[in-house]
Image (cartoon, rainbow, N blue to C red; front, side):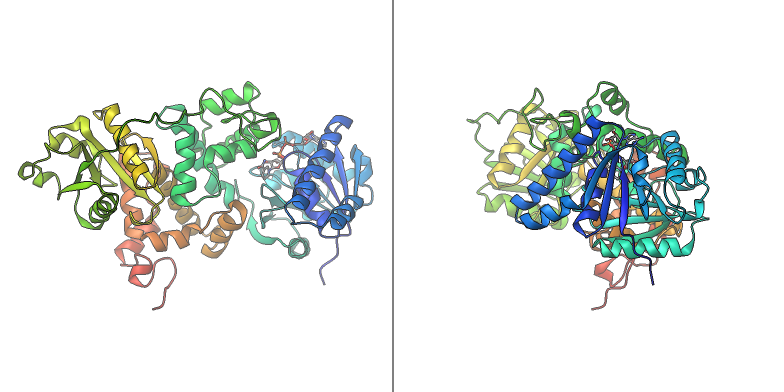
Length: 528
Ligand SMILES: NC(=O)c1ccc[n+]([C@@H]2O[C@H](COP(=O)([O-])OP(=O)(O)OC[C@H]3O[C@@H](n4cnc5c(N)ncnc54)[C@H](O)[C@@H]3O)[C@@H](O)[C@H]2O)c1
């Protein structure tokens, strides 16, 4: 029989702690909620109140249940209030010295049998545990943001965690309606080890002017169906927390340059731009803590009207993608001249078209084809993201070093004419959406290859912890392992970082003909 945790202490009521209090209290557990001072305590209480009021307003919580939830929570300043708890969970800022000090204090105050848990995202649970006299009773209990919504909890056991403690904490997760995934103590565990390289890369794209913040976010949200774009997610996480997590991942994870925090992130933290909680991060919000955007200097102005969409378009490319694109354009009333590929260019007359579109060459630079046309200023790449052109909601308009602003504008009008969201980006391997997605998929393969976790748990972690519509292995089997390998190879060729090299397991599966669903098997077998 797993032990029952009747009273739980939560230390630190910021972005995560207030949500963790809500999760416990909603599920019948008495909570002692602790902060450093009165002002922070009031803020934590207010966070809890606002979140439960929102749940009531949305019909997700009964007003009577909300009142019962609040009646289960006692608020206090200082750790002395934790004398009778069965479990204490800390959610203070992501700093090792602070957490070690706090755990040593909790060890002193809490009853001898109590379990101590850290909500750290990236720090070593082992180093935190050994600051106490009871390292066998210390675990990582990593909730996801927002804690009341995300169903995943990573349960981290160190080499000295007692197995009954892990079992009891897993049973508690089930009681809270969460899915506990057990992992060992490695930097970033499953989800953050796969998430933060991607987030940091998105900051880099924005910082270098490769694409706008809105376009980067739209590419991932609309192109790949993620619940929010990376810069919006960073604002939700809190840029100070994100910075600390990247620092730790970089130090503990073998100095992978992809985890070296983008300079802009550090500057923003120094300037107090911490995301939603401070009212401004990559975006500006109506008030600190609000999720509602307020327009700022970077908010795009609505496109000027009056420029008609191009009437005649040349489509360069062969195969199904070019055919699909030509069909979508034709259905939107555009006259289409198709050209099989660069070799065929000389034979076709593109003089009469208003715009030249390169379709389906997602691993080759658009400029290669553009130069072959003899009119590179009129050439844009159109990359349909999220399925065949007829289904894809997002189109990346690829601007080469020779594309004219007029051609970019014309391409956007064209996309508007056939009802797609268009984003603009430079001519780099993977453009925006695949350049951000593929390295993450490749990292997931490396994680599997290292036997840190299973394909099922990794898929579950990304779906239940980050709200992704599919886990990395489900997605790889759908997209095709050969397609993923080709794009990742192109990305690595352009940027030969060791961390971007295609995972050997991915290569081997492709060599073995296991390409995913369409061959009956990839990472998993697919019958029929
Ligand atoms: N933000 C996220 O998305 C997220 C997700 C999962 C895990 N985490 C982890 O949760 C932890 C907290 O992160 P956060 O984003 O909620 O931080 P935060 O800055 O929003 O909140 C931290 C809170 O801790 C309080 N605090 C500081 N020292 C304290 C002390 N000695 N005693 C009591 N309270 C104290 C602060 O007053 C503040 O309210 C970190 O370890 C972080 O890595 C964060």
